[in-house]
Image (cartoon, rainbow, N blue to C red):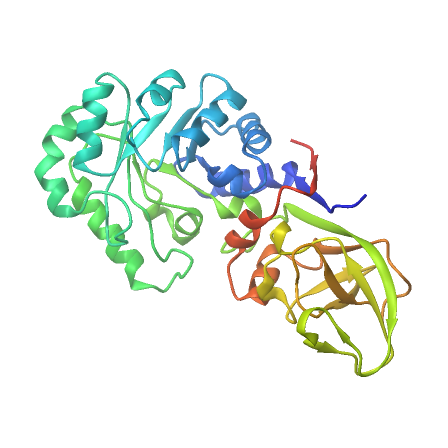
Length: 345
């Protein structure tokens, strides 16, 4: 074994979806964009469908087409980027529903696929995607007359329960959709956890399904075990890795493990993160390089064959904290060289 093993616990993932669904007064969808946050949209999507999910959200039409091939007919697949130029055949052939984000997209969609379902996104303050209040007021009557399947907006600070922006966005979403006879959706994972006022008709949990914050009660979904290639003794004063950023302060034992930033282990983890060898914390020694990382295993019971980077002792959020980033980036960065193993589902 020359590459690490990335294990995805589909039973834990579907259990997380079920807990979030039980919290909600609405239908609970599932966000599986970016290849299900790097974990494999086909396997993740099928597991969620078996658990009862009937509404899925992806970023672009190509992701939707791949998911449709995995799920078959039936579930609704929404495309969050909307109807982009050149998407018409794929949207029509694969039964994908674009979430239209602008008047230009609405015109493109109604001209190319006049009888094809669509949703709409409204911008309630994030200034990323969707129709702003002035644009919406100009097109609302025409848009609603075309029978949208869903109207959504996106919370910008839902992970912070005390952020006043949540309440401002909720109030504006209510104002912009008042009197509209159409299913509504505002809540991501954080929105589900805020309170039922944010749930409306469909919720869209994403990171919480995969074991990440802000869903503190989520079951861990991902573990990552990395093989050790070589171990060596290092004397006090000797350095490890590029540019000698780590120097032994005592007689040390260093393991070189088979992973690096080409596998999604961010260079920012250098000198800040650890792995685990038989429940012993072993700090990284030196810089993360493209394919290799040095690890100080001096305190381990012996030379391990593998070390654990993600698992019971270290979650994606723990690793993200060490790198100064968020769990989303850790998950979606995990590279293609790992052997992937799926449990349950």
